Image 1 (cartoon, rainbow, N blue to C red):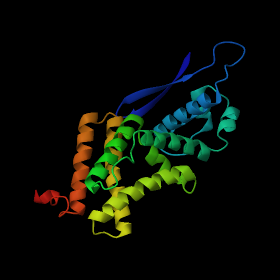
Image 2 (image 1 turned 90 degrees about the vertical axis):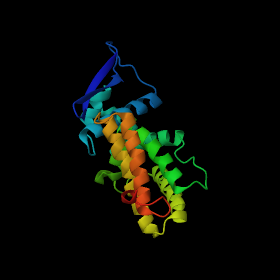
Image 3 (image 1 turned 135 degrees about the vertical axis):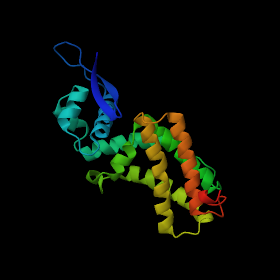
Image 4 (image 1 turned 45 degrees about the vertical axis):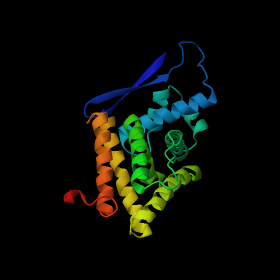
Length: 228
């Protein structure tokens, strides 16, 4: 049996998270540790996206997975640990998709489009969880070392490509990368919420990334969008 945990993504889209529930016997079925952790991480991500901010109510998480609140604290004593787990799962999916796998000498255009495409796919499938966790004040100063290392590695590699082609300071480059990364995040969110067809949203994402790079370095990327 499974418990249907209903939530809305906006634009009238209704989704259901199906989580295992105990069979109708005198004893509850105990899930293996790995399975229970994964169940809690999945449910926490769904609730956080529906709520739009952190932390979430333990009662909602307990209800979603059919477990006691006491059991939640056995696996995740704090919600900082819980949402680092959610973030690690998201970043692990990006790592599996090989978000860092562009050649060391790749152009900024190719590196940016590579990252944007994979990040778009992740957000379109899972919602803007990475953004929510990294930007929510509740998690300020609480992102763990492994998650920070992954995030920083991505930024460093993009910044290295940018330094070869842009006449900007280091601070300006980081600011520019952050701005460009909002494009796949927003386009992916629109597809996830059902506000735009996924293929159209991805094409728009690619066009906007190219236009942004052209605005940053007209000579390197073929002129500004207005000049075309």
